[in-house]
Image 1 (cartoon, one colour):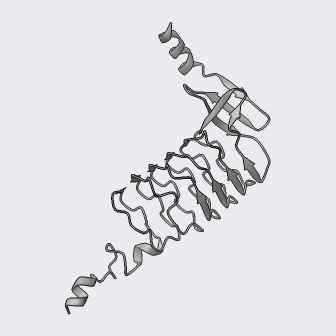
Image 2 (tube, one colour):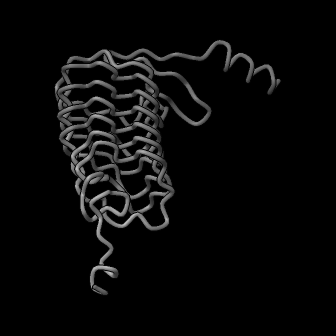
Image 3 (spheres, one colour):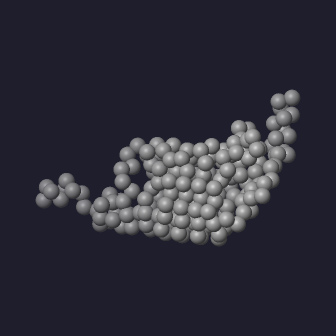
Length: 199
């Protein structure tokens, strides 16, 4: 019986429709599949019916040109790939318990300048914030374990701070001010302070 349930679950996923969302039933809650609303300031629901909303799935808000702010509730732990890609007017995202930010999740959000995702973020996947030209810092870094390749490419980060203990992939800060900073050990302009003082 359990195997039959799983087959039905994966082949014929159960969908929920609300005024603003299409959601899919996952093992431990709902994943938001598509946003159809027209609000500039979006507050994602914590529950739909009796089911907690646990994820924003791939492409849910992709190419939305209306939204400017998004508030994500406590139950949501995962932001899927391409979830907010090319939301060109999105300026602010607030959440408190996100664990994983998928690849390209906020890529191309050229006005995004405020990102607060809580203290539980462990993984920022590749190109997650690429081409976020207004973003000047790495969000939610206290529990961060991994940053994927190109995650902050073409952002305006001029100093990422201490990345000790974080697995940082290649080209994370490609074409950021930090990539050319004289304080960046990877920069051609870098001067080792110990060698400089020895002279």
